[in-house]
Length: 357
Image (cartoon, rainbow, N blue to C red; front, side, top):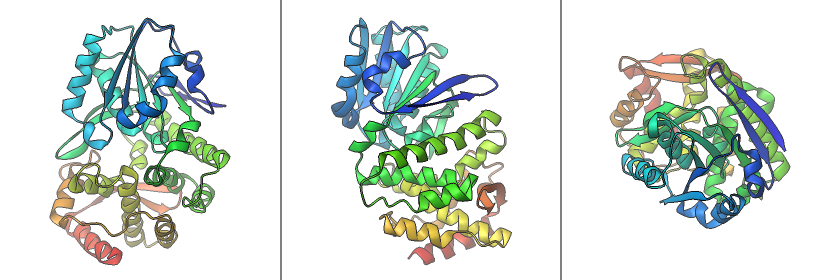
């Protein structure tokens, strides 16, 4: 088992990574909660809900809310539904919400916790590789039809309990999605880490020990950034490498048509091309492209119009005064935030879309 403590100026919580943690869940909770609401989705509930319930079996007041799987559920409708569930299950300010699932569940349940009675405790129990990123750092949100994560808050969990045995049930698409965020952490932090991850073959069964080490390193990268910049005033923006175009693709294609990680992977390719042009540097575009191609990432998509993509990129939370800001790399491990005017952005997008075919 590996434990890392996230310390910011306002909060402190443990991230615990290991095998078979769910069956001993209560021992990892930071307080003795009386009322608990477990929020999960239809897919995860069939796999792990009973294990979590059994681990908490002596608790008297355990509520359960199961929502549909998929990014479309991260909406105002289900936010309101879960607020109602919290009320009906008699949650109060001493209660706990457990987010059992992937990034969607963590974001949605976390935003409910942040706003119910002006904020109650919640615990992240990630069940995907992708959630190694979203479960750490305290960002919680729901989507708006005009953009991803536009309605949200900074609200950290009181603990992250990451049972890696849950990763064995992931379909190939979710493995691809999660590893995009792992490789992002490599690109923005360390050449050695990036080279290690880009040599990972996702077409064969994952090696548990290697995966745990990748997750541990990815979480450490994010923790270091979050500890220095909890509210994304400065360097935390670096964690959005690949997300400016990635979020625009997700929103334009419709949530669920492409996974978050698959969209971010395309966004990282684009960010590398823009970085090469703006900083006149050679970056590992071909290496990333070949890795994505080998591991069956979608590279040929039904591209939205460039006007629509630019409009969505302007809704990105980094953008200011309707000018797109992108996280770029001056070299691997050295990210920088750059304003990109519309004409320049259009030129790069046109060339990039032609290149991918």
